[in-house]
Image (cartoon, rainbow, N blue to C red; front, side):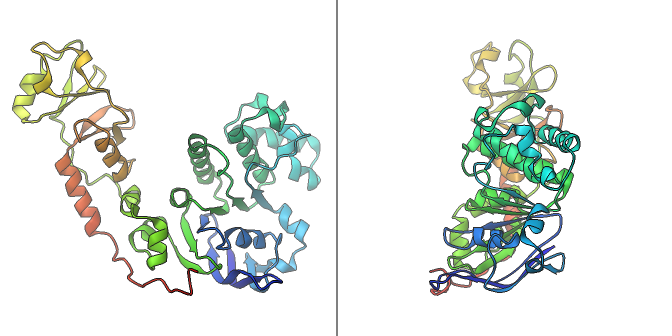
Length: 383
């Protein structure tokens, strides 16, 4: 565990970057520090590995004050990932990853073997080992940066906006990769970002900091979204925090209708009859393997419709029991029918979530949300 006890960082000109911070970072979890520019996120992170020392208070690493540990020794036991990876341009990817093991005195064979294993673990092909950083894309370089931070198997990993310099698609991929790695490795991770969506996606706990380095609230993402501590947190989370909160609501209470699913092969001859029986303006069409093809509106079909009349799915499905209510709602909003197709883990259709069932689930989610706090923002707190 990492613990901040009354930590303050005050610079010579009187600027206070962090102000009496009390915060616990649980072992084996991802704690995300988030907030606007000037709130002390990076300063707090850099005090953990003594790149900056606090002016007051203590930072405890497993009950040991970090100021009692020699800085180089401390840093070799803590992984550190920054923006744009910070790789050594004159070293191969393999030797970049093996940097800390070399510093720890590992023999070259062991260090390179470990580096090669980590290269594959972060999703890069073994043939990249002999390349140099300039031969890799930005996203690939960030993966190498994560692998390098993990090379000596440190219990603690510090990540300072590591994915902010890449495009949104690559960023989402890197976030998913970190979640996958953490499920395997269970590191104690402190992650800094200015992006609340990234914080909510990655964090087991999210600490929101105000300008001036004061802690506004720390909570798990679902609680943070449902019950912000005050107006500052509420404003920082944004007006769509209710939609974001649905990412933490399971789809298990969502009623499905199997009678709105029509199997077809080459024509849609059965559709009109089924539509009359179920009194629905839309039907979900599946192939012979029960995989989704799209939607049909029977009223718009010619007498002998064909598969060309099926409207394809833009994104359109959610995995029952795995995806959230937000995913189901997204699928419905992107569908021409306003409904969402539910599939099992194999991608086979098991039913349709109608507008009515979505409304019921959303109403239930709202009724189960914690009561929000109503404390106003103090003028001296948020600058």
